[in-house]
Length: 171
Picture 1 (cartoon, rainbow, N blue to C red):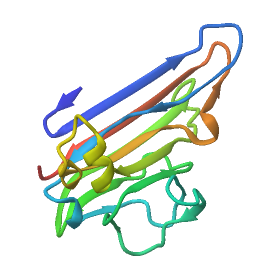
Picture 2: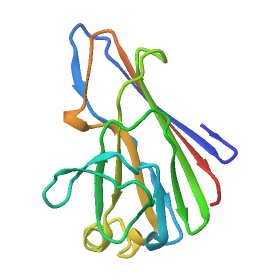
Picture 3: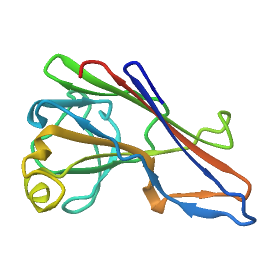
């Protein structure tokens, strides 16, 4: 539900069955930026991620500088902290603030979630029929959800909710 320069997105999963099941979710949010080669993303410093490119190893983002994008990126930040802010900027201009929380069976039961950071870069953008060849230069994806380890197990009679809040600071 949009409110001024703020958008709240909520996804809920209800297990009204008699057995637990495993599920995955991912809120595919694409953020338009003036130019991806000048973008800086803060909030991931010091956090573990699985790199879905190359050797697919688990690494930690160095503390200090925000992330820049200069090639294809496909990272899954594992067990991201509840409501920790992610900010997308170019230069000194902050464009978006993103916070997320996830819970099972209500606010008193926070649960882990992951955040995917993605940009297809040149070759994958050119190979994607519904993207202009240079579209990768104008967006970055920050996608919260639960995908690590094949997803989350939801017990019978339980519910899962993930809420993402996006604030547009400077379009």
